[in-house]
Amino acid sequence: MRILASLTALIALGACSVADLNHGAEDLRFNALTDETRRAWDVANRDLPFDSGTVYIIANEHGDMHTYALRPCGGDHICGANGQRGHVERTADYFVVTGAYPHRTFLLSPGGDGYLNWRGVYRDLAWN
Image 1 (cartoon, rainbow, N blue to C red):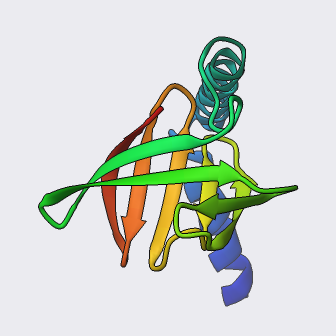
Image 2 (tube, rainbow, N blue to C red; image 1 turned 180 degrees about the vertical axis):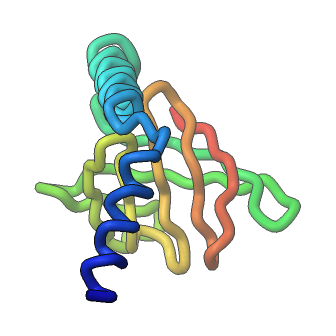
């Protein structure tokens, strides 16, 4: 009998809820549509990394400005200026380059900006 009373109380509390689940789902759909539209605009109208060959990067790293060069070297591989071979992966928002420079991951977004992850710290970068 107690279980039946407990379940009835839970159902009654759920009926009193004021949460609008349909409104929340509509917000999620709108945000996803906005992101997809921005991504399509970026691909159609902005420069993409590696479209014209080598990408030159400048980033503030531990107080100093450092420059890097990343060039395509076959398939999904990217080579750094020191000749070390890395890997590029395309995500929804970034071209992620790993392995071309030790302890550095480059997140290049369309249009010439992005982030440098150096030992777990994200720093702004510009690329051309």
